[in-house]
Length: 340
Ligand code: ZN
Image 1 (cartoon, protein in one colour):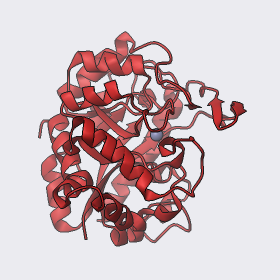
Image 2 (cartoon, helix red, strand yellow):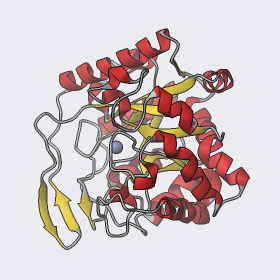
Image 3 (cartoon, protein in one colour):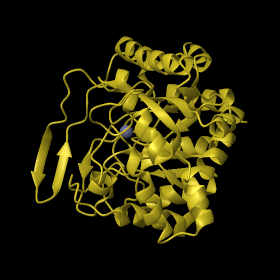
Image 4 (cartoon, helix red, strand yellow):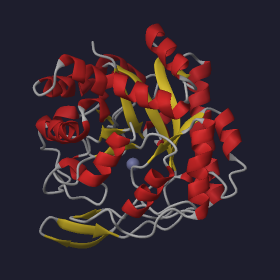
């Protein structure tokens, strides 16, 4: 079975995350289903929802919609939530169910041992203080990937509101603290994730030229004009930096009509992979499901269905390309971001 490294899931922030080992009743990822689908590694997000925010749709006509930006979340609330998720990862590692990987050597050993490799990630940097004094402690606890923002503003940057059709060019760029955070992550060896970031912030990060540009769970704006997706110019910059796009599986970001409709063929995901590959090369294409965070196509109901997606990719890509998309491209880019 082809081993898969997946660039984004929200599994360990779910209320039933304690059933991860034995099997959750619903959701997309748990250990038994990860095994049966070939998921051998992934980036596990700690995500802090804005309290009380439901994402009410502000305007909708035809297929178009605009959802009000979530209000900022307090540092203390984010610290608490991130603690819970990192504690869950620690416990899973202690019991031998996952390996929290801190280096590429860890990733390779975990794969060889057949232990699920987990990269600790925060989706939105609210748990980091603006002075960056707490970043080293998070690094020591295993943090190796950091999304500057979720779809809201924080001390570092501005996320895009969910909107369709809409440009990602909404709002100002990085703050001074945001630029310092990107530089410090590059020094430490923490991958910086640009999914959810607005376009001005993206270009500010690109200008810093600190590390490969990574969008862990995004799709192609030219095929699905969601505010969450990458323009061709952004995709080109990702390629030039040696980075990657983790193609998101979420139907709302891959469908040309933006609808949250499970009746979406896997060829839709493949088309996004193909578009990125044609522009910047298949070595910059990877996977970033958003399992346990979004609506999946019916044929990809959970992580156990990953082989179906790989088969769909094989209809359009060589076996070597599929191997890179499934594992090797994430490995190479994380090695660059982590400096080994
Ligand atoms: Zn996300």
